[in-house]
Image (cartoon, rainbow, N blue to C red):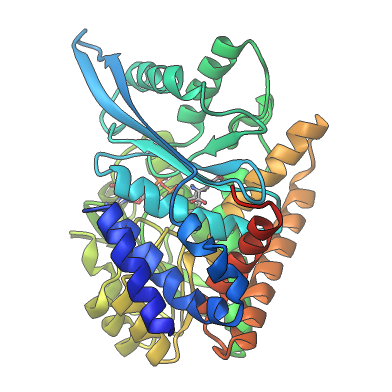
Length: 446
Ligand code: NDP
Ligand code: 2IT
């Protein structure tokens, strides 16, 4: 029955969403986990809960025309997919990267439904983006693009409707430009975006939240194995927002991060990555990770980012992008004695790689659970905006820790309850699904 359910779902999803391979991958994983739940709860099958979940409530695709510094007209494509408002306003980031197309936005939006349900905060699922590439663009070009993007997006979002935030290629600078344009178009000052600057409605800890939350989550995974971070070697892919603050927190807890990367290559520093240097290169200068070795000559740069998983480590934190760990990379990590993998990025491990980890007793923290600290802190930012108050760093950090602990508990309990002890992939999918499914049942056919 379970297998038949998955294949039936996938046949429909593939036929209705042709070519969107990342979306198919994300749906299949959830379908495989929740088939047993649907088996046990015929009311979910009758009300076609899963069939409704895989169909976004609303999808926007729009033209984004803007002018570059040479006064040449540029045309990009913008997306916002409002997937589910079962438990709160649509919530999820915006990605600017040349690879963005509908299939990427939909995989991210679909996963966001379950991730957001796990956070314990009342937020639905959505995602957006554009094939715009901020790399190599001037601040003025980025501003003009963001203004053009928001000139269409503003009519679809709002503090009680849909609250976007950052993702790849979208950080504080881009959120600022989009917020300014939203404010100008609507003549309103609201919490329509999260990840705002601290002076104008942002929350302390939002910048650090995804990376810190990831490390808090992996702490629980390590504890279950009787381990702590002390003395462990860690590899973190990427060197953007998630990666930087994962490195910072892992170091604070006594680990040594030996490698980070960007899309061109990776660096290995056996003394431990100097995070101040990485912040300077990536956050301030917007440079490339290879520049690290000019400032730390004992470190080594390797061209090509995929081989980072050959660097020996006990903990791997993939924090760059989707499908960056394939089966071969997973086998290499296992061979080198990796104990735990925590997904900072969204869907960074292929299904085959996940199977390798599960088969080899590697503790595996799936993205929906492990990287939920970012969006959870976004929900805390929304809360502070509604109250027109700002909490201290310590207060937000304490709430983030509580949330990551709760997510870990929800995942382990759900996995246990459905005969999958220790499988956090199944646990995250089942716990997230149940919360949304119950809300959908209560709200009738919408
Ligand atoms: P950033 O843009 O800050 O950093 C992205 C990093 O990943 C960069 O080092 C970038 O290298 C690298 N990267 C991006 N695309 C690729 C690619 N196709 N191949 C190899 N490397 C790549 O993004 P974030 O740190 O915010 O996001 C990283 C991941 O975390 C994404 O999967 C995102 O969806 C996920 N995430 C982000 C959250 C957040 O709050 N920001 C919350 C939860 C998940 P380069 O500079 O060379 O492009
Ligand atoms: O993937 C994610 O959870 C994010 N990019 C953060 C979304 C948010 O709304 O903070």
